[in-house]
Amino acid sequence: MGRVYNFSAGPAVLPEEVLKEAAAEMLDYNGSGMSVMEMSHRSKVYDDIIKTAEADLRELMGIPENYEVLFLQGGAWTQFSAIPMNLMKNGVADYIVTGQWAKKAWQEAQKYGKAVKVASSEDETFSYIPDCSDLPIDDDADYVYICENNTIYGTKFWNLPNTKGKDLVADVSSCFLSEPVDVNKYGVIYGGVQKNIGPAGVTIVIIRKDLIREDLAEYVPTMLRYKTHADAQSLFNTPPCYGIYICGKVFKWLKANGGLSAMKTRNEEKAKILYDFLDQSEMFKGTVRKEDRSLMNVPFITGNDELDAKFVAESKAAGLENLKGHRSVGGMRASIYNAMPKAGVEKLVEFMTEFEKNNK
Ligand SMILES: *Cc1c(COP(=O)(O)O)cnc(C)c1O
Image (cartoon, rainbow, N blue to C red; front, side):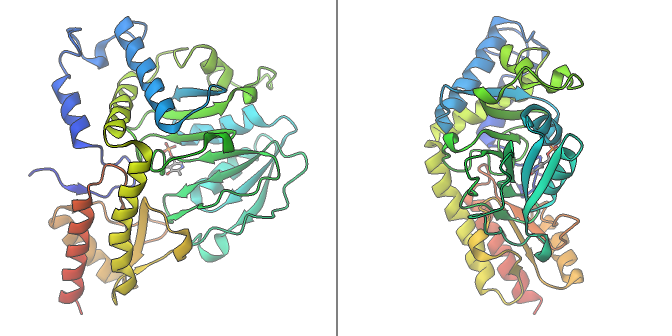
């Protein structure tokens, strides 16, 4: 069997060019006589890999000098605790709860201080983004937290919340590098790379330098202090070397393909194909308020569990993998990240059209 169209929410599809390059370099990276997996993270060869990756990411996102870029481990989940431990100075933070990931981050933060839920869309199973133009932001809140793209529910903040001057912290795991971004609007942008950038095991944290503090509670583990990693340029201990190398290749791929504005155009085109189909279909329905739709994760249902199961089984047989929805939503979900080719989305819509015809 050849390669399938992989609609997994994460770990997810990667650019085929990147995988081929990595395969070609597997036994001998750039004349070093060894795989990147086998080399010291203190070697000159590896230093070039991680420095180049950071430089390319800075160029792609236009990351200003007063922000630090950290390549860490532990997934987005580890940041759910690292963020309050590092950023809570007054011990207060405001959370906008738009899905499971934001909710988990909010619950975790309660262990370290007063984490206030200032808005939520849980009343309608997280199918929309609440109005965040005038929230009751606490005067002494250290930051306002969002999950910018809700991987499970398929919603996206198309306008950032009015934080009333507080620093914005955003989990962008599932929309990282999917469109241009103004980094200056954030105190912290972070995400696990396994959705839209690279293999699981790398978490990227982009943090404004003045938020990196030394005077933390004694109990904060060395490994969870941003200062530890900022001072060592992500080489305090052994970083996820191979994963960072693949991320670096994806950054090069993005640059070669026109950067983030070109990605946005491509992603809009792909999502439109699928949403246009959903909007005219009599069988399939999108589950999200239209103006809040994600370009990355597209959940849809037939309204009939048996038909959903049949769809998932038959689509898999047709080479369209991982379309089963998240266990908390049911139905289907197509994740159409940067590396999903337009042909994959076209094939999906073709399949859905046929399925609808055959199951009337
Ligand atoms: C997948 C995901 C997470 C969890 O990431 P881990 O790396 O598994 O900890 C958190 N937030 C968002 C938005 C996600 O998509």
